[in-house]
Length: 352
Figure 1 (cartoon, rainbow, N blue to C red):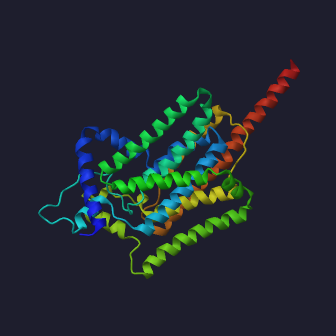
Figure 2 (cartoon, rainbow, N blue to C red):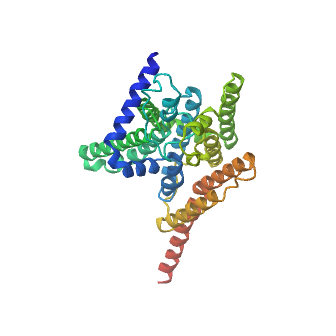
Figure 3 (cartoon, one colour):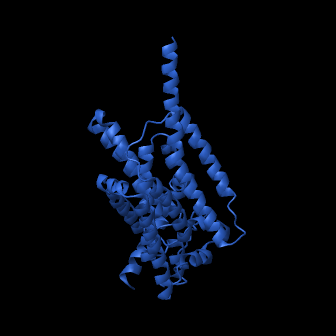
């Protein structure tokens, strides 16, 4: 018995313990894991921020995109199992003492397990949001700051419990996701990094995106050259998921890379926005809500019967266009409406 296998075996019993203790709270844990799914955050909560503040949206977008890219790259490098298939593949258990963990549609994700994408992305996203809230509530002193941090770490705790409850991650994968998320948050919120990226020309920023894509392709083909199937996690998920219909292509690493590249390319073209005019909330929020609804409809009509190339190209263009729209069109229309209103108000005052 090797040490790594022994540790994972202990963590399987931790998952069984969590499933036993929190079984009565399954609906709550399902809501938590769905709400903090990186894709859901990207399609719902983060766009709402675009309707409140263009500067904050740009900062949040940069942080989340770089964090998700880092998560995808580290997952590919570490290539760790998820609990629901490791338990059935490992020789740490025999056929006589092999336990069974509970799984449902939230369990079967066809990507490597370490680090947890839910925890890593949520840590960064919440770090940005709570940093802004801490500045806003600074006038209320230490009590407000402590309260916000308690909420922050409590949220991460419940996300971790939900990921373990559904057998998606081992405990160490959750912890590693949080730690990497904090590191990425600190790095992405650095004013030096944001200023450096903003100062670069659009062509150079696009060049950075191309370099990241080449790195991803290099990892993919390096694994192939080493005799490793880059899609091994998809096959393991199909093999050990109780219902293949639980599996979704949007949770694979390849699709994640396509989605991130489309959005990051839009950010590279527009550039990080460090200063922007205040938005007319009465106009920007309905605009963002309408765009979000249209984006969900467009995703539902993703062509799935015309091959992988068409599927990925459509997804890439969709994420590129909507990210560009949130960065460019929303502030242009909302702030422009403010200017028009102010001019009309001035003309009225002169006539009076």
